[in-house]
Length: 378
Image (tube, rainbow, N blue to C red; front, side, top):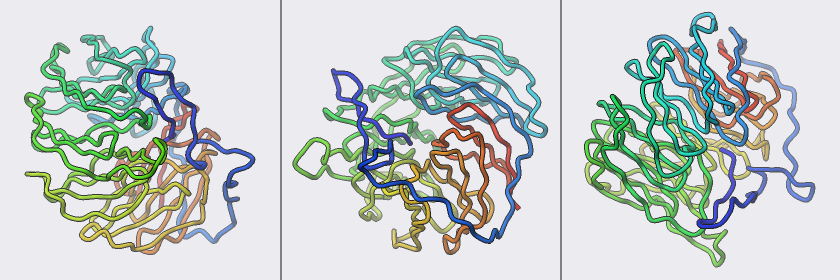
């Protein structure tokens, strides 16, 4: 995640937190990449392009065996997952601002002006809706409802058939908040979202009613900047728990029915949570990759090899945790002990969104330069 701050009612503040967002000559320098003996091999199966991301973060969608990708200049494409052939591409007149959701024959993207655009599986326009501000994250679709999170903290429920508004949730926001591309998670008719100010909420998918609200983290410190503790990850919802990480705060897990706290530990995440059957994985402000126990939050290992390389969100692919950095490198680490297993370069563009697992040992990566890579790790 690229960290910047928005001061409500004013303009975007191009601020930096340590070097998670930018490097300064007076700040810590990104670690140099060191040679190592690879334990695995990562290879590019095919490469395509969606167009550059501008100042936004894009993520691919997957449905019916194909990938759906988009770029800032309005291009949307459907790509054959097996060989990387473009089945179709279209050019909208809008500037796009978030990732793609593809489900049940409906392809949805958001724009810089708060429009939500829906297309059918052949790229033909279905409908257009308007939400309250720019759409920074990929929409989500479940049970005939498109859930869209806008940059002003609103969460919108739209009818997947025609785009009509079904409900809207309006969060109370602090004066200073992190600009984040984190969307929502939907599970069994419930929408889970992390909010600025350290909150997590659960909403009814059917009508947007607030079911519960809980505190992942509490603001601390004397200045507004020190008190920023926004939830920066999409909640992970598994095994009856909803878990998320906050910047300058904690990782916390809550029981999904009532929002009762299961456990919490101090942490400061800068992006999404990776997860497997045993551990959560997150990147902290110093670009250290951390593994913690899912049941208790106990620390398992910390990998400091990539200090201040402005890592994106981690994800689990086969036996490895993979994370991208600001120079377009992908790094693969052993899930058991955090040792480095493989590394590969892409187009040099930052990789901020989590790589997308697409089967055992396979993943899809979109860089901020707009390149799409299908990669195998063996």
